[in-house]
Image 1 (cartoon, rainbow, N blue to C red):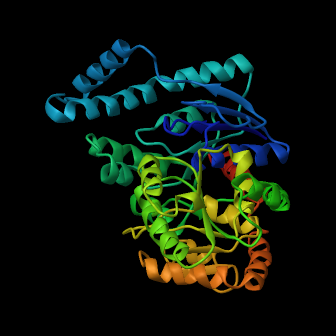
Image 2 (tube, rainbow, N blue to C red):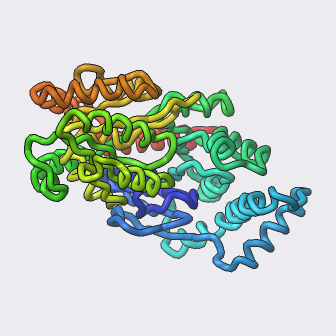
Length: 422
């Protein structure tokens, strides 16, 4: 089939390092590997990682600040909004996204016409203030499958502020309801969609993993450990992810510091983010600074090696009212044969079989987390057994299987569409 993949989220560069960027590339690669032809249209292409096997089209927002401001002002007038006071700047940014959403439909259709590409279905990654996917699918006369990875309107309001909340929530609900089917990454996200589109069909597909790549990464363990200069007998506690408040890196350092006072242990924390500089400063002031390695951002091709260098991966997520994540790095760690220590929250108890593929602890409890880490550090044979079972536990989570199920749903939607009365 011919698949048009839409990613209009300006914060997710297709070739970037974010887990969301990895998700885009892995799905596209898997679908291509199944024999499908893909065109990927995105708001931001980015750089830093190899391109997936697809035609990539970047349709960025207009670069001229004056043009963007004029579009936002015109849209504000149309919606009867007055941009003034402290809310003016953030509201203008949201209006610019709305203006982009309106203009991008014809830009996509023109790009497809230039390639003589007529999709059999549209696969869209849900984006805030986005309704273009539904209109593009209608113009292409094909079904649209919508992938929802987070409650974006709620997330924006909670963490960054949402000025045009009514507009955002209306567009979100309409996007959910108008899709031929929705794919959610967790039960919590599914429930969020159904609360706004009760009649929608929603399938849950947790994040996947490239099983072969992470198995190969485990084979290079010693070379990666040599890069951080740790002895064979030194236990390495690993973290791979974003340095953001809900990822719990401050709890991780508290746990590591307590263990470092009693054991020969090293901390390897890979990634960057808003709290990375603060974490780096905390390490620099610590008596254990020589036992910490912070490589910073890393291309995804290096993640299997960094993961393999560790004995244990810790995913120290903090408590949240509605933990909706499908933690990509947890699944990748399991595929690499590394036991995972994580809190008992959200999807994590489904991914980690407590006592068999990792250990679960009470959320936000540093002592309970530390006890779990120590239990594994002190028992190499148990770690080895867990590692084998960890790899086996994700054997059915390959991206190819996820892509196949999505394409099956799309085929069913096409057949239902063809059989519907005119």
